[in-house]
Image (cartoon, rainbow, N blue to C red; front, side, top):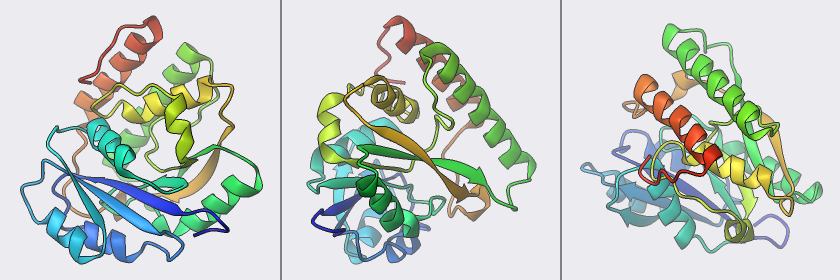
Length: 232
């Protein structure tokens, strides 16, 4: 707990047995419950998560967004936090971000990724460049000051989930969540810089830079003109 608030962590996982144990061991004591969404796993992800004290939710519908929606439906804490199962997001920063949320009377915080000194590989540069392009289109199309539209680390009060409409089953879920939050005048939101590097991830990367980048871009245009893309 942080103050009087219970804290939950939701982690989507698709075949992440290599990284999930280390991530769960790094979760700070302020987090009351961890929910790992086993998304069509064919390895020991679920077993490893259970061995490390997590609540495992089985989601047979493949997709980043479908995994998160299953996790959000199950989480029962006052405050919800998110992170990936491959160790790229610093779960140790959760208490600090929760304190920020409470002290500044915010409803939602998105971690804005700050590249560290190990992010200069060609692959990492491509990832960050793609993120800049998608973020730029998000700003232009929706006229919202969101500086990292693709970040997957969020801290928020659980009740905001009743105020947003989330449709994507895939990678666009992240940008959709932020667009919904920033577009709702009843939700007080902010971004906070967090050091980040893809070089620290564990296991095999699930993101296909060109395919997922194109789908995310297409989703932005579809959402802007009101065309549903639930499977994206």
